[in-house]
Length: 423
Image 1 (cartoon, rainbow, N blue to C red):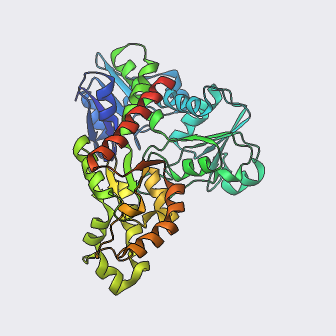
Image 2 (cartoon, rainbow, N blue to C red):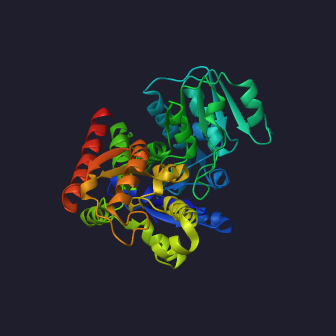
């Protein structure tokens, strides 16, 4: 390989897509087993590579030199082959500092910074926080070993913390419900950052946002460290503006487009049109429920009841949210009635409510809760407050599906362009 990424498991990596936007050079993903790591580096058959978990510390003995920053942190994530000599760098620290500054609006840190975790990413976070002005950093762990405070101790002794960084895998696919600690335990917090980028918004980030804090997931860090790595690959200064541009494009392509609304509001037809126009994958949660259960929805309701249907629906949404990036997801009319469904859909997507007037909602026999005009009217009045509360954006669904789809895509393009201007 010339350039690429090595790691033990790379199934959800976006590094190839990011580097394709950085420059015109080949970049491949290669999974390397622990027992093959020594031979891989002995061969030195590459020009420049990135290294991800769990090898950022393991590879150090195979290198000829490492940068002072990488030595201080004790981890390497970028290796460059220069005339047969292997040089190691840590661009994760550059990436994390960029992420923190994005959370703070460019302001340096101050006061006490909490770091959840004690591993390699936590060491990177400790260095990044110190270089950005933190007066003190406190690592947190379950056991409290190696000088860390336990999470319980932190909730008692460090309530004055001003910033918190999640440097653990908690919240990362497939443990998307995980959260190392609750930001609500620290009332003086002004911001939160999470090194995890899949899902886009971890439960930790969403919890911080619910508290009114500025919070971001790790995608910006991933892009920033990749830009810094490419500068080492080719011996040139990193382009800071490039990070924001690539981040916007990657975030937009990773984000699921989630459609909610009343039965008959056009979610399936509009979703299919968006998928056709963009090349995205289309998923209908009702179809997935039928596949999982083996029975049509009216029969599920008749034989097993609505609660059973809702449980199946929640399981389907959990699976889709954990596994899909960049998809168009049409949900059932009652999907957003459960908070856990909303949280999972928003962890990797943006929710668009298709708002169709009641006179245009046509009842059909295959919809157990919307078989008559009276059913539809009652259902709409009951659900509309939930639809409005959970939607990120509202789109009128009174035109043909293509026009509605184009309106949603136009809104997304405008949002991306405005985001570029702010960077």
